[in-house]
Image (tube, rainbow, N blue to C red):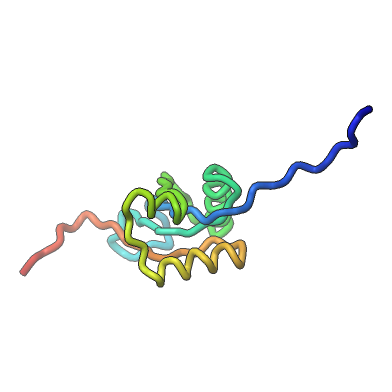
Amino acid sequence: MTKPNQPTAKPPEQVYTLLVELGVSDDLPKGATGAGLLLYAPGVDEASAVRDAVAVLKQADVKPLDVTSYGTLAERQAAGDQIPPEEQELMARALAENAVIVAQKTWFTDEADEDD
């Protein structure tokens, strides 16, 4: 007796913490040589979270150079990271809204920081 094809259960989405490096573009402030974006992106796995985040950035005419994943909330906590409540709220929002959330942006410049 053959069993009818049953749909396979899709694994639950999780939120991944991603660091995206951007190159020089017209949208960066004067003097910036690049930028880093800290993102929270949902996905059924790390690869899908990265793909979706890159796709969203490209739609916004942003050109990612490199993406580094720091894992899910559980993975980060298991590694000993202390995740503040505000960050956990942004992760929950990314999951609830199925959206890529930009949590922080940092501009890179060639100028050395002065400690005067």
